[in-house]
Structures are given as C-alpha cells and as structure tokens.
Image (tube, rainbow, N blue to C red):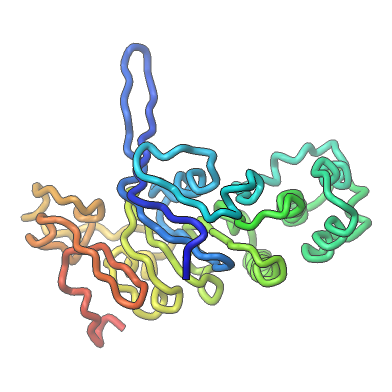
Length: 298
C-alpha cells in the first residue's frame, strides 16, 4: 500500500537569539515515517519529545531543516487537504461571537454544513449561542466543525484528550472514529495520554528525544511492546519516573540512542549505534538483542 505522506530522514533545528548570541537546538533527528490513507496514527511520548513539531511539519506550518516530506498528488494539490487542531484550539473562538457566525466564516454549502453538524452532534439551537456561553466540550466540537467544513483529507489533532473527563474523552474518541469512517479521512493523533488510545489507533509511533523508538500496530504496542521506552510508557503512572534503576558504571559513556541514559536494558553494545529491527511492518530502533520477546515480557 502506497503512503499518502512520507517523511524521509527529517531533522529540525530551532534557532533562537539572545542579544548577540544565537544557538540551535535539535528538536527532531532523522525521523522517517510513512502515513497511510484513512488510518488512525497515534504519536506518543513525553512532553518535549518532538510530537507537536512533527505535526507542524506534516501540516506545512514548519519546514524541515534537512530531509524531505513527500505528499501524494491529491494532498499536494490542495492547501486545505491537511488541517491541524491544536491543543485548546477551542479557546481561540471569540467568546462574543455566535457559533453560527464562526462556522459561516468557512464558505461551505448548506448540505456540507448540515452534514458536519449532524456528524458532530451540534444542534441547531446551539448555533444561536455565543461561543463564550457554551461548554468546553461544545467549543471543541465547534472548532473541529470549522476545520471539517474545509473538507480535509488529513486531520491532525494535538493532545485532543487534554483537560477532559473520562466520559468526554471516550465520546470524543467515538466521534473521531465515526469521522474517519464516514468522511474517509486520515487521522494523526499527537498525545501523551497513552491509556486512551487503546482500541482506537491503528498504528503507534513512540517518540523520545526527537527520535523514533518504535513503530508498531496498536495491538502489539499494548500486548507486546519491545522497546524499553514503550514498556516504560505503559507501566508508568502519570509519568512519575523511577530513580536509581540505571547502572552507574555506564553513566559516562555516550550513545547515539537518546534514551540511553535512562534505559534499564542498556549495555556496552548500545555505544556502537542503533540497529533497526523490522518485522511485519513493525520497527524497533534499538541495538540491544533483548528484543526477542520472552514469556516474562508478555
């Protein structure tokens, strides 16, 4: 199956200046990733791992420093084909404007508006309210409706489950699944909330320190993760990192793996570089032979 978006060896540097001093920070390093039409791809990792930067590069809001991003012909021919809904985008809605006026900013025909309102369960009565008088969940759906009226083929959502209770998160997951099926769009979800993507995503990309640790089918991620960082994400609660689990004798060594200093599986082999293990379209970026799954790991 041919991908609709291909990232090839993408690296991104953020440059900033203070007075006469300038510096560059590497946010992404050598990221390669294929995205397929109508899939739900979730990119997971801690804050600062580079998830949002990937989203911005895919959407065209940022330009990669090195590497390439290739789009299928239908995506490349339309500037509106890829849309992104940022975390708390609903807060950008003018609280003094009516919902109907906000949606009418997008020039869409009546049938398209009617369909989106139905898909997102937005009632006609809600249209007459001001954006400041409706709930946070309703504002999120209005922000999403405004994007969907542009008829995107790829929709990127940055931390869509933040600041929601459990019921709201589940409802929003159901809504996104429905949109994917009925609108036939590709969904890219950026999140650190690993627990809420089970039974939702098709594939998962695990990111740490601006690099991909693992790419795998969602079921495999939850049942048989192979990379130590994937296992850490699944076993951690609220990202309370364990301390004292790293052997001190390797602390002064350098490795090309960004997870090296925190990895409880690291050894001298990790100094040599990172191997790519590929099996049934799953990729693990790790030089450690522990990847053979044992009964204890399951």
